[in-house]
Every structure is written in structure tokens, then in C-alpha cells.
Length: 147
Image (tube, helix red, strand yellow):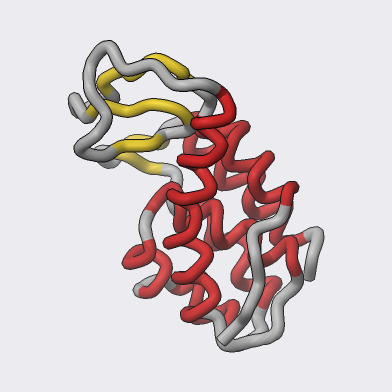
């Protein structure tokens, strides 16, 4: 079990791909969303927040991904590798990491085999999504910079 915290570089990566929206909007499947991809019962049409509030929400939302990666990773990893894995979990969820070949390779210390596994998670509805591909490439690059 690791005991990392998410770094400023990790937050920058997440912010880059989530984008900041200070007015609530409905995502592709109709879920009300605000800030850096924050959802919840309190988010509703017409809701407006500040950039500072968006940062607070993001830090709160990322906490579950940080906890997941800290619990799941049993091998020695670097801060950059941790940050890449947290962004992955923030975007896809803890269950996806837990059942992945990516995690199996990470925990075996096979970082050269783990890195390309990020790229397999670029589909939605059976189709490659360019935004997901770019995010996975960025995660892979960050992961490799810490190997």
C-alpha cells in the first residue's frame, strides 16, 4: 500500500482534460456537471460557482481516486506514476483499475509493459474517442517519465 498525495502536476493534468465550466451543464448523457467534471445531487441547472469553488470540488472529488491508487498499488512507484494512475482512476473509476492488466503490470514492477496499457482505454461505445486517446497518451507519458 502506498501513501502518496496528488501533486500539482497531477492536478494540472486533470484540470487540462476535464476543463473548467463555472456554470452547470448537462453532459453527454444528461448528468448535471460543473467545475472540473463535478457531479452530484447538489448540481442543477442555473448553478454557478467560482474558480476557487471548482478547485475545492476537484480536490474533494480526486480524494477517492487517490485512496484507490494508494490501496491498489503494492509495488514501489514514483510520484509521476502515481499521478498518472490517479488521473486514470478519476476519469474511469476505481473498478476499472482494479480489474486491469495495467495494475497487474504495475504491481509486478513491469513498468515497460504497464505504460502501453493506458492506451487501451480510449474507447467509448466501441469507438476511439480522440479526447480519451489524448488523455491516455498524456497519462502514459507522465507514467513513463517516472519509471
